[in-house]
Length: 240
Image (tube, rainbow, N blue to C red; front, side, top):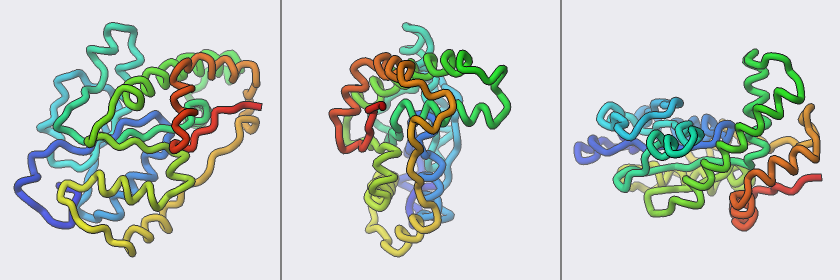
């Protein structure tokens, strides 16, 4: 399938739109909106596990969108360079991210809800968070700082919350394989059906500790400065 209201044989062999996302960044809300907008001509396949450089593109060519968290970048160097998700000049990318501290809280809470926690202690959260912040730092370096071009669109959860209509319009235009004028009524219907919700405060998290969160922020190193310098991302990392 192609992401368009019209089918075209010239687009049938194009790669899907790869959605590279930090976990808990609103992917499913955004994709539900895109699916709703394009209707039966939109399809997506979720590749939540990392794939090596020989990703079987041909098997995905009939799908519109493929999700990947690029878990390979969390492997020790040099394996992260070998197994990380590939950047292709011939592919389109939608990079979806969020305040790394808040996405980390949300991911941990998801694991708790799924019954994957062992003891439910601050020490367990600390171990989980240090590993998770390492992944987020590498993700930001690779997909935000280190990747630019007409084939990549970068959107934050915070942007989608603050300016849902503009973000959805931009995402749909980027997802199109056949360029068409957007349908304003359908666009508004997407927003009405799938509203983005704002995030909670750090202090609402049961294991919140200002000293430890300052440590997590410091572990982000230059990637924290990058997020704060780019005000268009609407990300506020300030604590306390």
